[in-house]
Image (cartoon, rainbow, N blue to C red; front, side, top):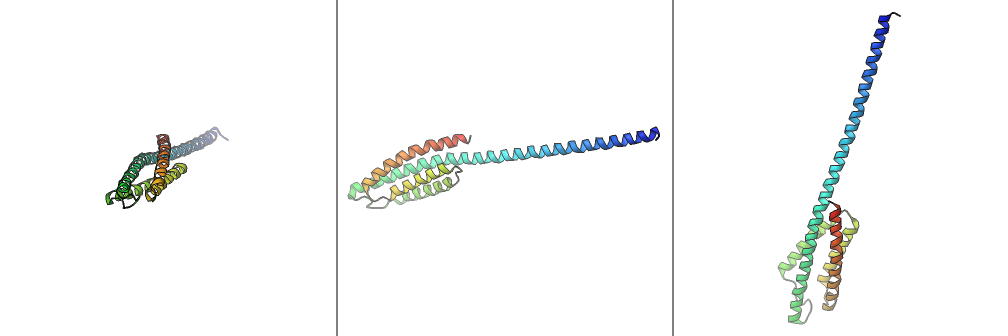
Length: 169
């Protein structure tokens, strides 16, 4: 073969090898870019979820405190009626307080179900149930006992809620 043929073959092989390397490099770069974008999207979703949980925990802390205040307010309203009639639960709660409690408990229920952590969700469900049981109790002495237990449980749940909140920052 003459030198021109060898030169042509060398040029052709060089072009094929160069193009192949270029195509391979482009493919690797695209694959890495896709993976980086997936990681960015995954991290963005995680951060949105953490932000949602964080906001829910903040609102839940407020609602739980408000619910305890309403339960205590209902207790004192019942206590006042008890002193007048000497009969516990001799009358219904005032319509305004009853409506406030209903609205608060409904919001608590919704916010509780949005909690991702099963343990905290179950503790808040239990706390809400204790509040409801206290409001429905028909015996003054048992209400006194349940109110103490409810207060202690509330004091235990709030720090756990705060810890979960801090973990989402």
